Length: 469
Image (cartoon, rainbow, N blue to C red; front, top):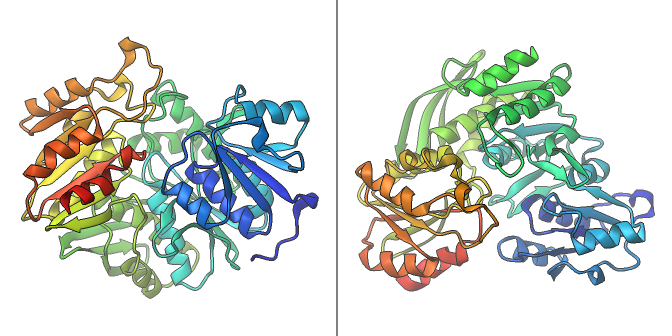
């Protein structure tokens, strides 16, 4: 147990919407710090529900005022919670102290740490995880709070004895009582920004809206935070220029670059070049986008004085993050992989990343568009090209339903037709059961089934493996 003084005599903390990756991670940190922690959520499913139970968090399924003990000292309210939530209403009526997740992170964990904040539309979880692993390998004992479970730690968090803390900085809004983005709450020592694209259509109107939010953030941190930015993202470059911010860059023509990218035998090799250094990299990370993520972390690590040999060692031994190109199992030579990709750019990069590692088989891409953005028409014209490198595409109706006006809804049927018009075989399915029934009989040894969704997807991964058995 971490020996940390109880803040203001707080003993019992309850988290509303505890199964989100950030909230679940915070719950476990608070438990490890010695607080009594309970949580509730509407959708309680693995892996986060298992993770919470393994860490001794009592979890309630569904929202009910009775879930909040009268002796509760503090309630932390997640950003998915509305002011009409029965537990939120009970908190207000009873006058129980409450705060948002970022406020709690600052109050209980990050107040005395030098924060390395990872922001951007894509790659935050992987980049945060790589950064945490590099600092750990270098013996700096970092703290970290990441939106995924790092395989090397079997955890999404660690409270280390060192001075640095890696935090995944989300642009999503903070809470119903604070509509600003989460990352505005942090005061970073180093800021990594992976790029800016349109996403989160439920809170952002368009790309200009997202740009304004990032510009406000850059203006806030530019004078006291070292900014590391992807030079390949034109929107990010425009935001930095508008804010008058200087940044260390990575990617094509950046301060940090890579060349000679080769994927072979489950490993990726490349030559890394940066200010005053050049070395060879050998890592299990797959895909050009992950070499970009690694480049950002190399730049940050060098800024902190980590020697090249420790950087090479860390990247060579990085085991990855659950639900990011995670192999869930292999049956009869058929690989079942789980990935969090949902934005068109992420889908495209993920397919391109894994394809070279399965040269003797097919990449069967199974996709569930279930985010607030992907269930709307915003990317109707963009998604088809994202699947160009797949050998077979299976588009499944999302397992969750949302109240979206019919004239704004994304059409999965049209997506399948548009993919086929590009010369890629594609099929439409009504449910995960139908996907399994339709695809399993056609799978062959050396095939990869790449399942992409940001949700549980009806536990389709394990059910694929069971059927193959």
